[in-house]
Image (tube, rainbow, N blue to C red):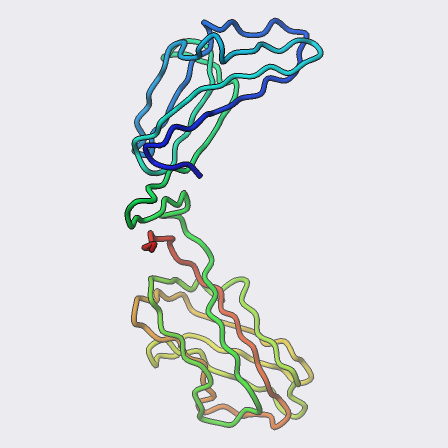
Length: 232
């Protein structure tokens, strides 16, 4: 992590080589700013900051850089010209402003990620009970049968299969079925989009409950889009 408006020293190590090392005047830098702009610097490396490699010793390149934009910088050591260049090495850096309250940069913002909805139904089951309620604070989608979801009981049904319903805003969208002698529940879900404030509930409404089954853990795997958050 680097600080905004503070000088940073970037260092590249060049491995020992028997090949002819690049000439100082051929070494250029390509900067890609957090805003996506490209800056190409022609031969910016100072003489005293370049030690070429030899067959037995590593070389070194130094460059001092003061970032004036907060966010994710990508820096490339290249040879060539702006229209056609070869990348020798890549460096990426996060730049933060520690003097104000900011929203940290996150390269995952805007990408879909799994989102777990967890329930623990403690004790023995009885009919017509709400065993867990989840309220959404973001947009979440559940795909068909919510791939990756799991349900497990500490004790299996010994007499009759036990079925729990999954509700979305009190509308049935799926079920969790524990067959006889199985601690593993079978989850089925119809696709649904859960909006902020919507509820997902696990209930025993109208169910036939085996007196043996108890302590059920449920994890429904949905998907959400990563959004920016506030930092102190």
